[in-house]
Amino acid sequence: MSRIRIHYCTQCQWLLRSAWYAQELLSTFGEELEEVALVPSQGGHFEILLDEASLWERRRDGGFPDIKALKQAVRDRLAPGRDLGHLDR
Image 1 (spheres, rainbow, N blue to C red):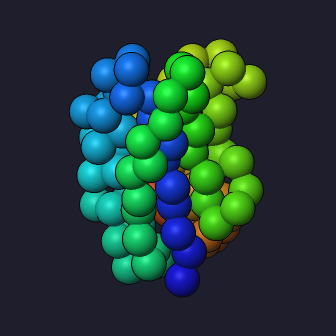
Image 2 (tube, rainbow, N blue to C red):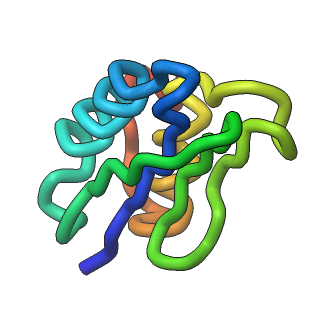
């Protein structure tokens, strides 16, 4: 089972955004994930990791991920053959 960690900046007030990403990932991949953790951070840091691999980093990747791109990135690592329904169209 895999783990997702969402590091978010408390100074930037990104908790709600992070919680929404966590909710979306759990609703789509709840059976494949052991946990989705929200990790408070500072200094504008926002990063999503699957196990120890970085899926998205705000500065590196230019902002916040679109939920479609994020779910596809998680799917590609967890269950490459899985159809995400309308997200894959």
